[in-house]
Amino acid sequence: MHAFLLSLLLAFAPNQTDGGTVGIKGQRFLAEIARTDPEKAKGLMYRTNLAKDRCMFFVYDEDGYHSIWMGNCLIALDVVWVMADGTVVEIKENAPPLSMMFRGSQAEAPSYGGKVLSRHFLEFAAGTVRRLKLRVGERIGWELQFRDGGSLNGGAPLPKEGGKVKKARKK
Image 1 (cartoon, rainbow, N blue to C red):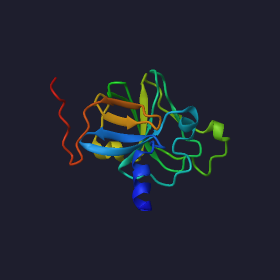
Image 2: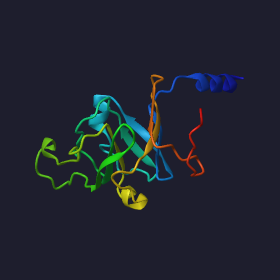
Image 3: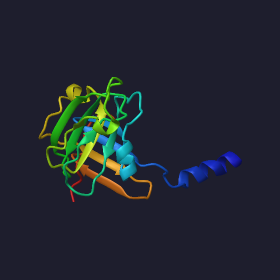
Image 4: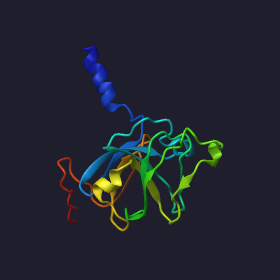
């Protein structure tokens, strides 16, 4: 009886983390979300790996020049900048982690991208862009859910779980 009540409670409990799905060229990625300034500043710092089917989606309310900073980053990343409609406008493949040999302060760590106006950017495991043959001008899609009950959906239609793209419903 207690297990049943606990499962009911968990089923109706509010989501405690932001998350969602990103779709690129028929492949789905589970997305962590960086929405607040502290979440954006931390990003994927101190991580020792990022699975091939995962990414981090950095949410912004307005278009801007959003560069990334690799301070305290331990893994190489592919970074993709997109417009609000999902169009890829800039790509940085294999942004290197901050070398342990780096002698400058963390504030002097290299930054990448942000040369083109974009709405959001996403970080993937290094090699993802090459594997998918993703290019500037192509579109990606996303369905994100926020712990406060909000959501953000955009870009191209997401592929279904089996890999086929969802077709838009006719109205």
